[in-house]
Image (cartoon, rainbow, N blue to C red):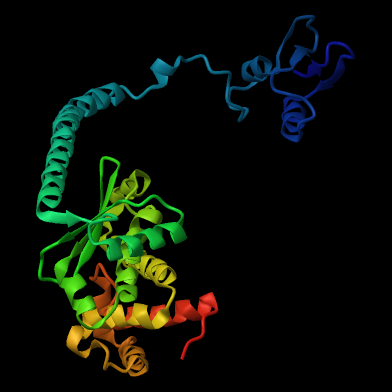
Length: 318
């Protein structure tokens, strides 16, 4: 039995093999209608081919629903999976509740700790002002003018270690200089060397290291090598700021050397040789390994960086 196609032109009749070939070539579609030779009833070609030969090789039009086609045990497996998901969901809810409580507690504890520390500073350190340690105040004021920033509160605190730091507590900016660093610098140095130290700490405020936007980056602290690398680069930035504020490379270098060998020997150190010492050892394995775990750059490296920065600024370097 042959089949006509195209009711408008009634092409054919064609054999079922010819019809299949037309479909494969895309000349007609399986959804087109056809008519059996000797009949006036036009039906879908799929139906005609199926009636003529169920083994024609073309799949019949789907008459089963999706639920009839679905594997009988699929729903059972899904129910089991839902049941297995309950402990995981409960764990996530518990973690969420813990974080919901822990984060506010952490923030409160941090706030209380900051409040207690600032209270300690305000009542156990001397705040620099135009009439209190005026020479140091003028040095800080000069730095702030160069950096185009408002002067934070600056304190000097008794602590016999060579250190200073900048903090920001609920928008209140402070710089604390330990007496160990101040005394050591001024013992055989001068206010210009101390200006480098003040400028360095002011640099943390001016560069935004203590701003909220930078605090968001603390979520990346799990990669602590990256965190330490960032910390070292911040210190290099502040060294550059301190050099800019001091306006003099030898003074900045002497301040760093003071932290390296102390006040008595700082003025006798050959800076060029010290920088050469750093360059000699900087590529050694354990020097690099030690650097990876340091929050601050090595002191001799900072001497080298100060020299390179002065050259970058176009200053004369001996």
